[in-house]
Amino acid sequence: MKFKPIFVALLLILFSYGCRTPQPQEQAPQGEIETAAYFSPRGGCEEAVVNLINHSKRSIDIAIYSFTDRKIARALIKAYKRGVKIRVIIDYGNGKSRYCVGPLLEKAGIPVRYKRGSGGGLMHNKYAIYDGEILSTGSFNWTSNANRRNDENLVIIRNDSHLIELYQKNFNKLWKLAELTN
Image 1 (tube, helix red, strand yellow):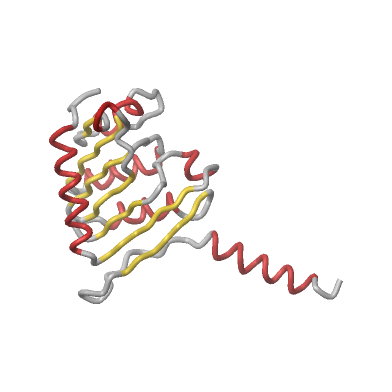
Image 2: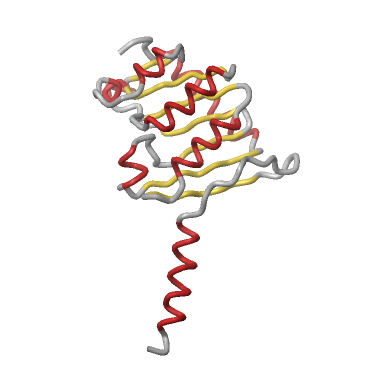
């Protein structure tokens, strides 16, 4: 019984670390690369993506394998309505799912394209570029299951212009290859 208070304290520390709430975006000093990592289930991935969307001012380019998360979709629609330029590429096969939010985004006016993977495989990317300055990537699909049930990860990278440029080139290539409607 002597170890009970220490055990409880350790559990509280571990729980608070795994469930940290994403903080509002802050710009790191010019030239200093900043990174953050989130892990699901319930580790802040969805909240981090919504936060990035809510703070975007100019553009968001998204290449995502599976996109069914309505909270993220609603944040994108709000951003689009306030003038943020948004482009979304979703895997062609997942775009046929009845839960895919692609049609919801299209109805709001957001350009959505559907991409088959090279050689008939999957378009398995999971990244977004915010204002050409911030990148989110990792295994985290933008789905409710990814947020609540799956072991997934999300990495956010700020101020790495070379890396973001590589992702932007990849996105632009995929955008040209993707189909307008599924």
